[in-house]
Image (tube, rainbow, N blue to C red; front, side, top):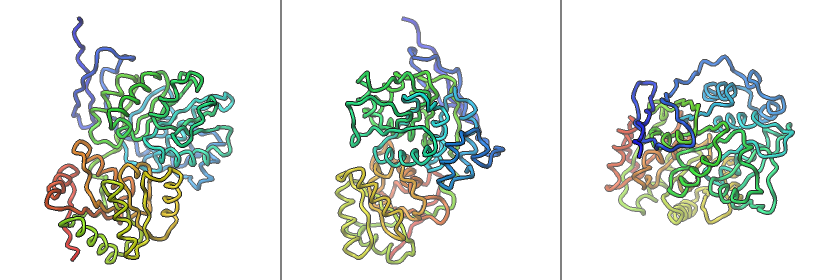
Length: 417
């Protein structure tokens, strides 16, 4: 038996390294060393019209009243478009601008004259897939690019796929790929993995992603992650990619800049409900989101607030994806309201007009505690005139200090009474 090779390290811009346990067998020969590049925010590009984007896609982008590149897009779009044969691992906060960037990258790899799937976008939830397909169809309205969504509510298993761009969840895709006549995955030119830590969070989802990576390894791969500790992800990715560039746009010190965070002590669930009512009675925040640990609890909280005269919106997995999207759209277009939901249903929402996030329950899982807290806050609220309120009891109070230490932030105690 031959000895295992020493695994390469991942090196950050500050010089620190992450040791990895690279298996000796791999579909690809990994790079000897991966470095996180410093993002170039001083790009010469200011407008989408200055990039090498097809006129039809540009017209679609501008029809959505999007003309200028934001800070994130300036850093990632030029190198992705310039190096279509290079794969990227990008650490960045969740944002609508990120989705626009990778949709442009996907569309640029497509030849509309060839009627077959050429771009694949894998997302962690059906809700996010449905929101994304609507953006794609607006962006490609003036082009001949066709798109298709593959999720449990939208199955058409008897017909092969001829659309150019496919958006799907990993489990549904892998299930459908067992049929050889669905489409040829080896013809895919670009695959995008959005919210990669969530895609690999469970053992089952990790299996799906590993199998998909193993099937397809000769196209451009782009991974987006908001995980501060990419060790686990990079060990997996490196087994299947070459020419991988890593870019870090995620800085702990900047993520919560301009965001005020508080905690309020509560004795029990009844006390939490009273506190919640007091918050909305005494603040002028028009729109807020309340995170509850399970759907039963979220229904109870929504009913309590509704009975007290507050305008509430409830997201629960008991209703169809389309009904949840209708509820989100109504919430977005309303002048005021309170959205009550569990964490999994918040992935990909990007609600920019929400200025208060309330954690009725703190995240429960120890392994994903910091990651989930970060996503709850930044997925649904944006720094600047934003507030985060955590309702805690004697058992969960210690977690506030853990959050302060991990993110280097201040979470102040607030007395509502």
